[in-house]
Image (cartoon, one colour):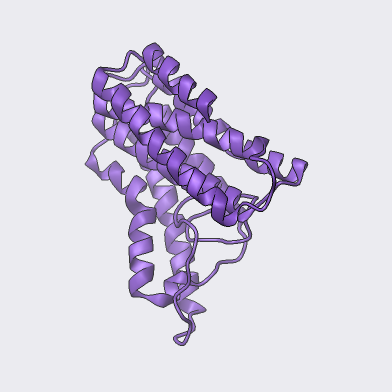
Length: 246
């Protein structure tokens, strides 16, 4: 965790963050670290943190650096594009490592899931902040959180979903399209098109899952705690959610 913290500070200078940007990145990472420590005491049954969680923590550091760029503002740069691509590309590596090392856990699944959601939210903010897409792109980053609120109001939305390769594909498309928006040589109209493709794919995935939940709803079912909606449910978990690939 200390090593990742140092990475955040060093890479922040490579991104030429302002003081506000560095404070934002380091502050957000500190919050993530505290939540990780809390989660370890609740749902991590293994005696060590494990390489899968280390990869997820590194992705969290990259995501926090991108959040610092939101505070800094400016224009799209190759540094931001490379960092966003790396954060997206590492998704899936942690799941593979968890299976390989037999260190999968509810904590690891939730940790990976929350960083996925945070990455999409930050990339959406960044695309809007750097004028690569309109304010409508913010819906991509908030869709999952809005669904969580809705599932608290309508219990049938909290029912588990069956595994789906479609969700995995949608997540890859969403992250890739948002990362593409940050490529500086990409004309803005093309960047807007990339953002729109990702947004449309995510909305379609949500719609498909919500329709399925409605058709299979059980009015007597109690509300349950569910993983993220609209984002990828990793190979490290058995739980599913709308828009989230398996």
